[in-house]
Length: 119
Image (cartoon, helix red, strand yellow):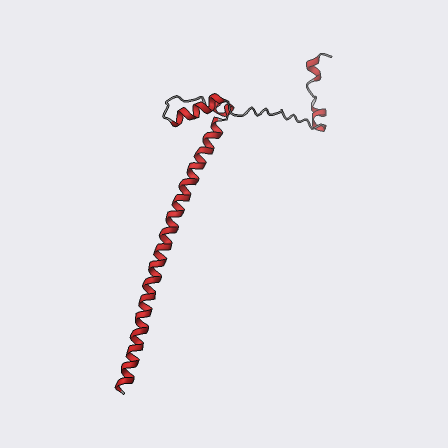
């Protein structure tokens, strides 16, 4: 039997067997040239790397992480701004309501004293 016939399973045998091959993944890290490319892109280089090469070298993942970091920073800045505005508005509202309440209480107290003085 030739070697290529042994590597192919017949249908009845294939249904009874589970065959799975998971290739070993070699994580070589991001090459120095890819990191240099990222630095040049930051400084405004017009060179564009092929998308397939970006995936292989890990540049695509670095770019996604960079975008995520920038987006997270912008979101945190916006949340901080909204929170500060809310605290400021709440403080001003509380201060205004407190002043009005204190004014009303003093006016009531003075009215009562005037009524007691007149009677």
